[in-house]
Image 1 (spheres, helix red, strand yellow):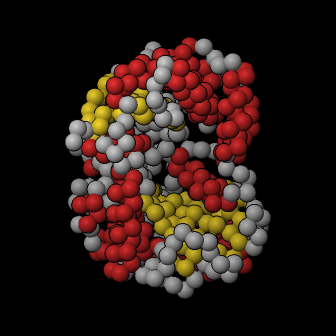
Image 2: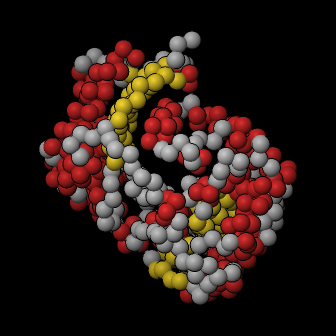
Image 3: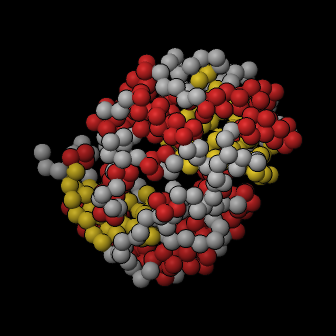
Length: 420
């Protein structure tokens, strides 16, 4: 992996890969996105991406994103995220200049076609309806309500009503704000079957002619991205009409993961999550609880530095919720107090290693390398993912969990199905 800065402030990363012979993937990350949304335009970052959906010579009005591009095609796609707009490009390696010229035009002359906008909105509404009923989404909405500032729209989940009131003009204006009026800090990753010199030359000839901008960095928009952490412990007991079909309660516990140098500590927490899942499941099963598989997770601090949490969740019959909450809290504390046995850790390590992104997953590497300077992740640290998961030991897992545990300061949540 090689990184460089262009004279106009654009960051470039390159990684050679022959996983897709003759093709390259490019990801452009523009700082901003949902970070600046208000009640008046909540959801606009996602719908604005309509303007960046093309395939071959086809515009977004008739192009369908998501399928594999043909071997000779140039395809672009866009998305909006918590603190960025993302433009993805897939193209033959020998047409990279042409592909990046198209990307530059999409940035400099954003146009949202009404027909494409309506189709994209319809897909977004269907997806929103599907996701809002997922237990993890129901939990996330409650965590947001309990912990996040109530006066900031960007922390609220987008609703159907939000999406329905947006217009193509708003979406186009949103893109122009990021690309023309106030050129956003920009990072680009080029991954694929192309030499470093050829990739840098293509980027310089195309994206190097964009207007000058501030360099993207972990400090970019940090005052907005960094959200104060309310003190824990905190508890929430509530109901949800979205759970009536399954008739199970959501029981969850979480603590702040904190921040540290590099990604190894986050990876140690992730290994601990797998241990926790097995322990809690075994305990509940042994107690006769009719529990769904336990899910535990943590993510590196990213869009909102300092906000990352270690979270565990299980679905149980409502009458077993209190017992499940006790099991989650006690097993999290035990993991923070004593290291797992070697055999126990090795038992979960194999599954983690099997699910890691492969070295030839060009789409993954394009995304993470494009976001790396914004997130403060060194390319070498990203590349060590497999090595870290292979070498993290029991005491390292315990130390990471003890730092997050902080004496048992937890957010514990129980969400019961609402009565009909």
